[in-house]
Length: 136
Image (tube, rainbow, N blue to C red; front, side, top):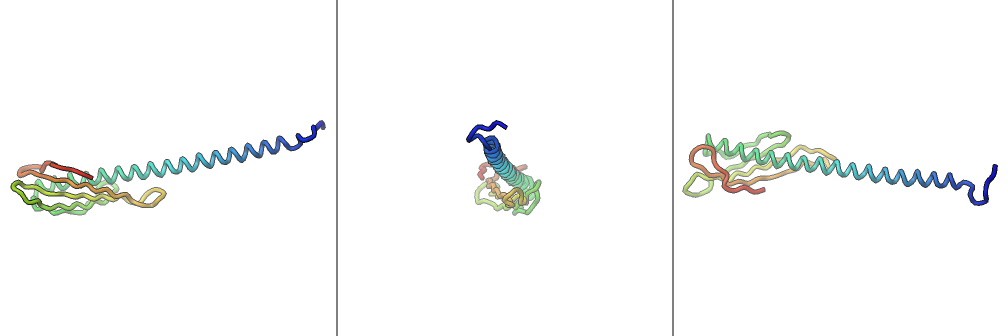
């Protein structure tokens, strides 16, 4: 064997450093992917909750068309529980304020559900009440 002084074990040290650096990079990438997946799950749950709350407002409009004294209900839309509350507003025309609060089932890494609320002012004497104002 022909070894130069000071080069003994240099290849082993370099290989070990490469393994450590590669492991650190893989760990960082895995954590980033996990965080991105959690954010995606949370965004999806938020969108589902918002859409369910909007569905609750549409349900209130349909129910008011058939029963102007409709005051609300609890229903299930998709994976969300939705609480719909309606009360009549004073005025000349038939008008109501409807509030729909939707909560998705717990999912994801945080194990929490997402809640979204939509409030709408509905008006109309005949047929399906129109949405005059809407806010989250």
